[in-house]
Structures are given as structure tokens and as C-alpha cells.
Length: 149
Image (cartoon, rainbow, N blue to C red; front, side, top):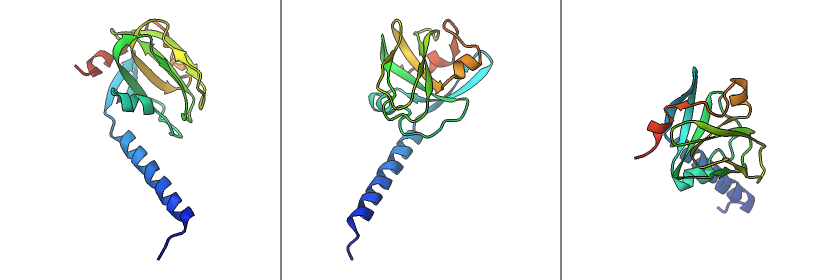
């Protein structure tokens, strides 16, 4: 019995989506804090997880985010290709202090960059930092101990 081509394509797509979701679920999660505000952040510490980031997700819980840990302390940039939800990104130095915060629109390829070298970036739902009064110079607690040694 032969399956119609469109059904086989559907199964292949379903398989790809399922494997992508499974891969995202396997990222380690760390607890960070911005003052009294707790953050549950998935950790993207290798090239593959940093490139995928929060792509293809339809939503994210309010105190959840993604912590990007870069190999080098340099001027990092982010974009929103294939990212469905609006995000805010905080670029963070080696000591855990926020350098600058950028607002990012979904499904764009605009570059959003640190204003000076950064070791980390923390993506949260758009407006998360502003709604809590968190600005450049604030420290993100727990971030430095999250970095692989």
C-alpha cells in the first residue's frame, strides 16, 4: 500500500517539528535573578543552540527566557529570523552587568547589538525588563556561575 505524496510530506514535517521541539526541551535551565525577579532561563552555550535560540516558538512563560553564553567576550549581535514572539534582549558583560537592552520585532533580520563587548545575552518576552524597571547597569544574579568552565 502506497501513501499519497502529500501525506508523506506531512509526516516528514511533523517529524521535523517534533525533533526540533525535543531538542529545545533538552537545553539545561538555570535560575537567575534581576533583583527580586526570578528568571528561569534555558541555556544556549554551544553554536547549534545559539543559532536556533527561540526560533519557531509560539509563546514563552512570563518569567522564562534564554541565556546565550558566548565563547568570547566581544561585541555580540542578535536577530529574529524565524522567531515568532517579540523579545527584549539584554547584553551582559563578564561580571553579569547589563550593558544595553534592545527591543526586537518577530521574524526580522535586523541586527540588535551590544554597545560594547559582552559575554552573555538574555532574551525575555518583549518589555519584560522595562516593566520591572531593570536598566543597563543592573546585575543579573547567577549568570556568571552558569558559564561553562
